[in-house]
Length: 138
Image (cartoon, rainbow, N blue to C red; front, side, top):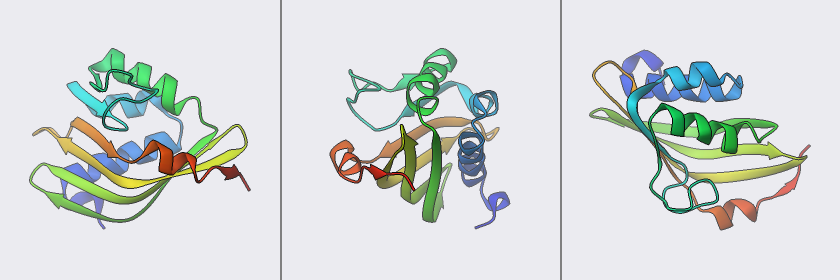
């Protein structure tokens, strides 16, 4: 799975690397000015109205609420599928929060513009299923 083979895959891998490194500025720089984050898609504690986080300020606020609140995040993806200007990664996002591990299994997509900037990061995962995996972090 070479990051050079597809611009959306490269952007997705760069996004994951920035999150792992806890580098908010690098992560935000990957998005187009009108980019959107829907993680998870639909209403959630991060997005009560389910409209997503659009634009630099809203995406930065999502980082502060969802990513900065964790101790660590890892991406345990088994595969990815690139088509057109998008890629879908399948697997698990593992978060450690307050000494507990939570695994969110799902499909995670990235759509990019012609410059390779992320237009849409969309995460298909179920909150109840993820919460059912909560266990002490090892």
